[in-house]
Length: 324
Ligand code: DGY
Image 1 (tube, rainbow, N blue to C red):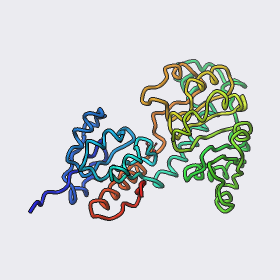
Image 2: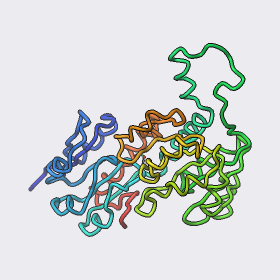
Image 3: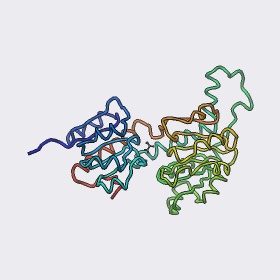
């Protein structure tokens, strides 16, 4: 009788003390040095594995899956799963799971942090002070835009978008949003009475626009030159969703030419490589994809992925199965 446990790859380094309970079910292969595997190495490491816990850095393609007949589940700790070819997962009978919900509030907090830092020019002002340029208080020193009393626009009104909207109540803001479909009246009322508008109106009327939609081929460059040209010159743009939703080259041009006042960006096309021109711009706040990075939330994301692979190995339906 074969009593060996099924094998699981944990493709990135993550909280060993949370992973510990996987030992009861799996023979684990870890990546304590947190290397990013090339597609070839990922394929080698996944040979003979029942499953994998991963992040957005693991690309799961039809080609990869065709070489992994024993693989049963790929489980990302992220809510976004644009790194999975879901159709290919389904046709190879591989379950794909993500980690929704647990990061909504933390990500919404960070969207606000970026919006406020951008509108009030926090990082630009801090840099000015650190390099010794502050000589006197000035009436017009780093004047920015108000958050309170302004109009918040949200593109993508899923659970994260709604959490962002709820926070507007303390700031006396009006909230407008655009989404694939309009929310129910009850959801709108819970989201600080957010008002559904078409995309044109959202771009034209928002004082601060936050992008909170998932990446999909349809969402590629949904914010490009034409969209940026419709925004107010005083507006700020925040992206906590995915690189690729914004055309970075068009955004750099718009920031340089004052088509919009500023941008707060946590995600980028081709991250972790940034378009180098971002670094020379003062009116942009740049962070390295950390919107969900609170200690409690990152642990919760890992635990959600753990729950999914344990359910799969027990022959149960993983709670966050994407390809039912
Ligand atoms: C997510 O959960 O999708 C975050 O962006 C981390 O990848």
